[in-house]
Image (cartoon, rainbow, N blue to C red):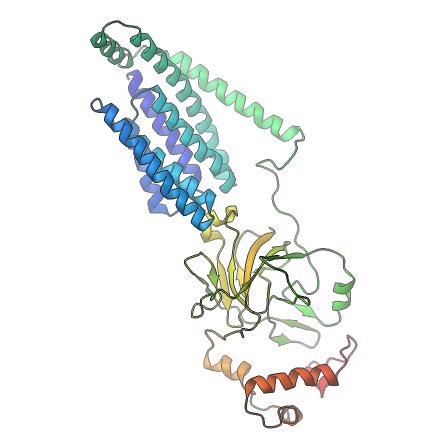
Length: 448
């Protein structure tokens, strides 16, 4: 095999391994990544001997124009990392078809290395560890052969005759003995040895900051009020617990106290604790700004307020999202690396309006919550049975409850007025206590 063919094959393998690390992260669509992989595998094998100067200038223009386009997308959406990585993959896929000289190969390797670095961030899985070892070996061989190609070009440039110059380059690059096989094997062995020794030092010696293989998760917090169940009588523990579970910061303004964060609604009481029985959820749709709308029929009108919420890992099977009343949209931070893996971080809503997000367990969450204080929650996806149970008085209702409801409402027809009377009634007529009998069969008896 000629030196030029071997160099191009190794270059293709290096580029394919580099982009495979990104592809296995799941952050980009599979058909798109397959197209990129095929382009990187085929491109370096294409040898163009004519119009190299014109094609090189055309490639530079394409790089500038596409860079401006992706820069506009990045700044307009604030999703800088996503579009920077997309630009690097697109440019390397095109660059692979225009490898003329040693400098072209080096630019090709730089783009591939950038993809490998990004893959180390967005793909913290076993696939990265499996692919990075052969990638390091092939990249080292690529750099070695690029230096040999540079020597060939510089030696040929020293020739007085331009015709002889081109003939010498073709002859040397077509040679099968320009680079001994023993040197390639020795270089590969040294690369693997150096890499393995570096890994040993990585684990044995302490270092500042978070290394790649550092444990990124931590045990979840189990605290009353931040769990999938609420046990009556346990709120005293919550008031005395000084552990920080959630931090809320206003975006573009101040929050007026009191700040009440809505998490999830519980619909079943067994005499001691409240729990949730509804499990059916629907994925939230996004608007043009990549915000997940709680109610797709009611887009944001611009009058909403926004808070940034940092939520510690909470024990339970779901990531419950908290927001001030009434939440209208949720949004991950634009610079959040999880935004590159949308299929692993999806937002859902159930029939009660509770919003949860799927994702790796035992990890902290950072997100933006958009809310409208003057907007009521709209019950979406409610079946006739759910409307009967939750929105109307159920059948067989105790006569005491009916009498109390009529006494409070006083036959008012306006729903807002009835709700206001209920609020005033419970604020003025009752003192709440953690010490009561909590009848298992009739929990409302404490109020009657």
